[in-house]
Image (cartoon, rainbow, N blue to C red; front, side):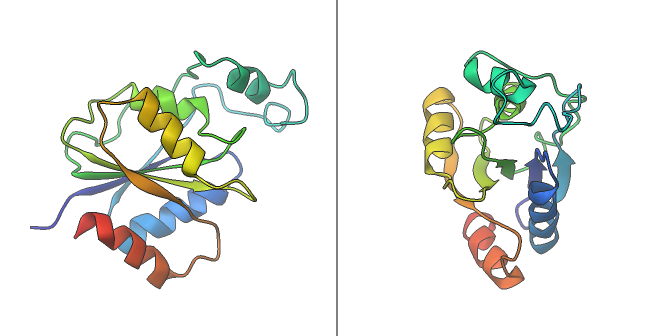
Length: 160
């Protein structure tokens, strides 16, 4: 029997959702969208406005946006891919909300992110330093246009 895989993701503009769905398809994974209880508007996501919701959240290290539901099948998964767009050079704080909502003991957690320019290394390091009890197996920046073969090869390292 192969490993049970879950792809959990937060997407603000659709790019991460598209990548997550492709990853779930190539890994035969369950998929779970991390949806904020209060959805983000375009104004909320304006990173150039220091008074926008996302700017305020990202300036506050204790910020934990509420998730609409906690029905991810984390308990039954062996490997969990967690995806997000990079905000302010790191993972959005709703990813912290997700990580704090479940028990990841014995799970392999692999991060993936989408970004126009920022790489994922700082996000991985930040989450590893914050959640020392979770076994993070690295991460990768993946953008639209990544081939199915490349996704399969990368994901296969964690699920075979």
